[in-house]
Length: 396
Image (cartoon, rainbow, N blue to C red; front, side):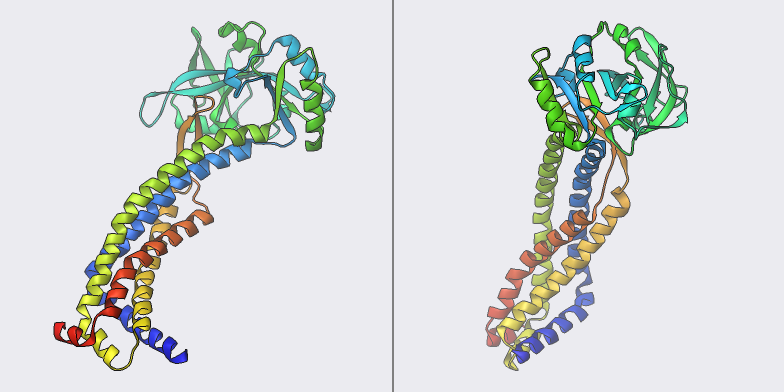
């Protein structure tokens, strides 16, 4: 066993030291693998960034109440009487001003993207004063809060970054009028940063919604109070509502997007990976062909076929590892934190987010590179081990 390992170590050392003699083919394989890893990690980081925004938005102590059967706020509708019953339900946390319950209106407006100038759907949310108590992570970072009863809005920092006209002092078209941006706010990286907020009482007549709302966000006394709160409302004959945890609602919204991105990213990486495998095959066949006599001589001196196979595979894996690390590094520095916006298919509105190149994505990319190297080195390794010594000496 020791002799076998010694043979493997000796052959591998020789293989690695002579890579520079095949630097053209080796570089092509290395950078081909690096490109595959960079694209794979880059695409998947979109899903991670989108998922991070949704996870940051979910609070297990906050309940979202919509009309029964509604899958999103866009599909929901609640009367003023219903929202009052919800606010009076036991289990909602309270402060000096009353129950931490915010009845809200959710509409979509068209705002041009800064990057392309094309119109995109941006959510405009009408809120009540308690909205800032329910979402205690919302902080004004520039300007001031809108004044109740006026045509003023505040804009999430993500929306202000991605869309034109949403900077401080800008104006947006709402109905037949233009409303002024008086403040920017952050929300701990959550989806609220992709929204525009205003007074629900002003937004309702602008869109002829009367006194109706679409949802109620309620901050509960504790996460454990959710089930009792849900049971009280869903069994109350006066209302016909659906109650979900805010965290579960946003997790469900992120599932469609992340699944789609995962599928697209894997498909692209698989297609590119096939090309990288052929590159690795070419490199390793070239390595074997250029050293046919050398390998035959070593075989004649007593080196076994097994160590030859393993040494060629290790050379291929070494190239793949270097390529994987290079590709992962490119992906991290090129994509991590890159700001973008994409469609949330549940609400048909844009969500601003940043690409998130996580450690697990980097590891996944490197593992994929090693798999490419393993497949690319296997057949040349077997060929080198099976070649008859006498034939190899003549070919060399």
